[in-house]
Image 1 (cartoon, one colour):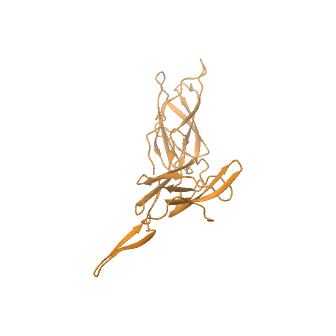
Image 2: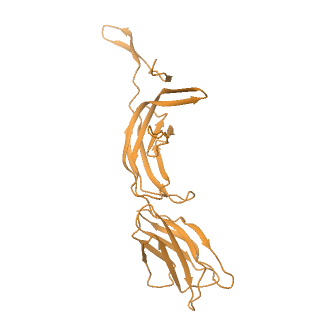
Image 3: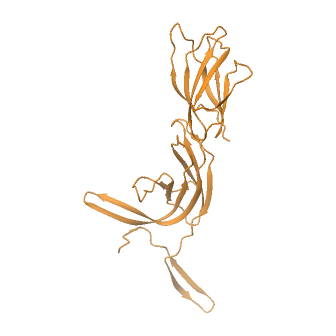
Length: 258
């Protein structure tokens, strides 16, 4: 369950017909939001008090009407996760006069991703294209390959929020071997520390860009293997001891065909 006090609605239209329609309700906010339930609150405008409110939602969902018609809130249930809903709100006075329609969007919380898999890696391939030159090279790295499965049924999905702790390294978007496009359910972290344990968390993201709605995170941890010596030299041998000297591994760019 996710709860937010921030406004996560997009106002689409609030038309005031001069001499005909009254002002719309004001101060929209969403104090409760889950995968299947959203609660919307508002306030009466300063110049008029409405005795009731007409509320519609699309796609269809269950609207829980309050016992008091003048209550300035509605709860919607039976929502589908990660879907954008359109709401229309109209205030009605005791003598039947109506406000201009206030139309806005609300989002339900999306489903979380699944099947998070972390694999330490020691090299990546880089394709270089410059004018008539084209080649693929391997780069030795200390890194982590992160893969997961997308959340089901999120038609309004706008992406994923990927975090690593400790917050180190550089995050890359690998290309799909089939389409050449950036793979949205895979990341590569480079510049990590050998022997360090890392925790990766991923959340599905939807909603407007200025106020995104996030799923609950899926989290996994793994440890980067310690650095292996490139070679070992015996520096000193005695009757009861021996001194070993290790050389670090080769790091850098190399051509795999050499």
